[in-house]
Structures are given as structure tokens and as C-alpha cells.
Image (cartoon, rainbow, N blue to C red; front, side, top):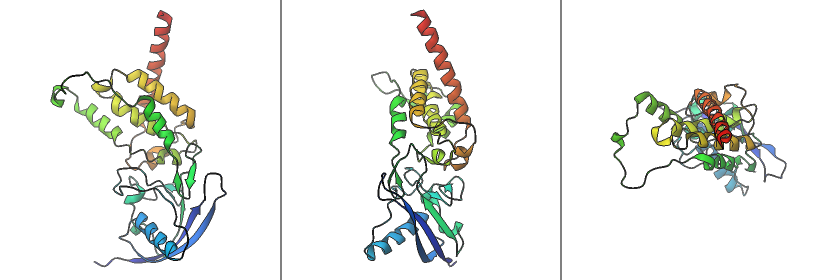
Length: 258
């Protein structure tokens, strides 16, 4: 079956650096196949810009398989574009019609300052993970994984949380710029498992309070779940909030005893 060729108008955000004033730049892409991915379409645009002696559009990308989470783009006002459960690198041009105008922007969140054009700095996520993303493991020979009984519903929930690729779509889609879904996923995939119990309450306290230093507050809009390319449930936020309350109560009891 032959592929369809489409003519598109792109309005791409260009910004020389975090302190520079940005603007939209219009480009036309002719005869792009609907089998091309969105990032391949941007590659074609950049090849043309370079051949004309102009600067290429800067955007983040790496694996192009929906795993690494670097492909962070707002496409027509939607994080990762119009297809649910899909990262930008997995979005194909068949989702657009010939003659469409596509507006391409970086994540718009104060915690993600623009580096250049469509690339943002997401190191605030790293600080959250650094605050509590580890477990205590006894020294000695590694035990067989089958020796640690984990109920299937618990294992499934932990794996659902571990799917988070840290792309930042939840923050970009949230009207408050909150990172609760990201933080909850990173907490839950450890806190749900028996191996993560030693630091369970210190982990949630440290990670939530680090999150609060950089991001807005969650008011349950639910846009984070809708934008997440891995469709992580906002139920994870409820689990995080419950553990955070338990952690604060536990700390108060410990202070009262001392």
C-alpha cells in the first residue's frame, strides 16, 4: 500500500538561550510521507536549514523508541501531540492532514528553563530522584529473586509506576506546573516492593519536599495522566500522599519520644 504525501506548515519556537526573547518561525514541509515519525520530519527540516546556511532547530532526542523520555515537545498545545499514550518520537505524520499548521513549542514550566529552541533543562527531576531514589540491601551474596515473595497485584502496580520515563509531560500539561505524578511514580515503584520498605517513609518525605522546592502544587486537574506517554494513573499520587502523611506522623512521634 502506497503512503500518503502531505504538505504542512510548521510554526516552530526559536530561542537563542534562556535569557533571550523567543519567537515563532514558520516553515513549510512539502511531500512528507505519513510513515515518517514526527522527529524524522524535524530532521528533514533541519537538513534543509543547514543546506541553506541557517541554524538547525535544537530539540532533545535519543532512543526514539519511547524509552528515554528526552523527546519533550508541545505539539498544537498538547504534550507529545494528539495521540494518547505516545511519546513524541512514536508519533507519526499519519496523525496529521495535508494543509495542517503544526505549532511546536518546548515544555512551558518555570521548573524547566529553556536551554535553546525546543530544548529545556529538566535537572529538577534529577534532584527529586537524588533525594530518595535508592534502597538498602544487605551485603553478601545476592538472593534469588524468587525467594522474596511479592503478590502479583503489588508487582504489577510497582511495574506500572516504574514505566515513568521522566519526560516531563505531566509537568508541561499541568496548569500549576506540578510534578506530583512523576514524583509519585518514582516513589511508588520502590515503596510498593518489600525491598523498598527500609527507607519507605524517609524516601517519601525527602522526595516530596524536594519536589515542593521546584514545582507547583497538585489540584487534581488530571491533565498529567492524560498527557503521560505511559498512561501512569493518578492513583499513584494518592499512594504518595498517604505515605507522606504517615511519614510526618511517624516523625512527630519520634520527636515526642526524644
